[in-house]
Image (tube, rainbow, N blue to C red):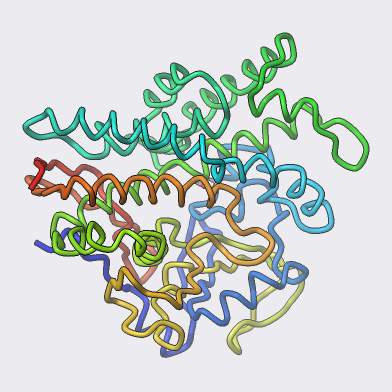
Length: 385
Ligand code: EMZ
């Protein structure tokens, strides 16, 4: 099996019409596939809005499990601009040297733990705990909080039983209410407190807005980071020479981070809702219907990427859209890039030898297409070569 391979599911449709279609809970989606078209539509927030009914731009749609708006990603300009600028500085903190060092300590500890095991599941024993522990750095909360978050599993809105689980969603919502109230009573140095002290357009943020920001922080960077880290293990298991290349050429690690994120594209797509009758790729799009910006497809567009299906860890020209494009570009991208950078440094310097023992791939059904986005489970053994 080629577990380290992530195929392009969209080439035919992309070259043919530039579009693909899927039904999602009776709210169909016209998927935009080409790099140029994806960027064009992402830019055109007037015709293709994010500020529709909360949950509707997410695919699968979350309208049935939440009515609270995630901020800033479900808001359009000009309101979007004010929220975004109030959050930018906080989400750039991962660039600070001490943040990177703390991530380094965390990754080192977690790698020694898995190195002491005969075999382990990458998701439950590494990627999920790493994502949750690293999130305590982003929020500036005690590391012990991560135990609660780990217990929620890979996705905060999806469970093994149901694709959209409203009981699970309320666990997160109740937790956030409690955390925001606690920060109000006892201000700390954390993100909740920073938000309680922030102003937007001259007024304090409401608790509802703070909750919307926190939901996005918890939900948006969860399965995406977990899949990226897990897929990295699968990839290097089958491409050990590439890890050796990074050990020999550590200056290539920043390029490698971008290339792996392009190749994995952990978020397949993000929706938009048309605000008027319009068209995409010569195809009519009706007012109030959905399109999606298919990042995963755009990232394999051979009009932009040479040999798009080959991982070139030293790829220099890499305008991938795995973190989105335009004003909604992922806020958590800096944090994610730092996690990946630290992880690749450690994996390469230890020259980890990874063996896949058993794997179950996670496949998304997307109308006529299917796409491997990560793994349900990935059992491996590792040692230092
Ligand atoms: C939403 C989304 C954001 C959504 C950038 O992506 O991530 C999904 O995993 C969540 O379910 O609610 O936060």
